[in-house]
Image (cartoon, rainbow, N blue to C red):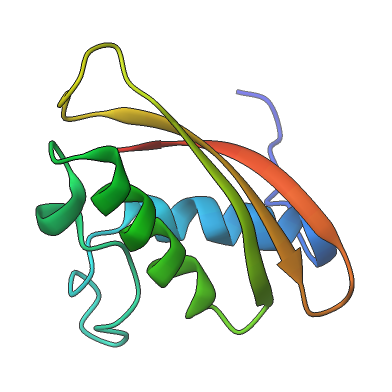
Length: 104
């Protein structure tokens, strides 16, 4: 078994990792942070406009995010439960990042 060490990410890489986790967490799932996460029951399987709204709401609640610049949604078919999203955000530390995540 290889010697594996945990790697703690900070800065831009850490923010992207945390934002991806945010989008894969159901809001209310974490009893210590009930507002953390995405309202998947509202967003998944519905129109892309509702999913985009919920993604923007979830991201802007994160204290590192200054603005949500873009949200692109891709689905295999309309109304599919799982969506691939590409998100662009401006962070308060002046970094702008773009990342892909699976939602649903």
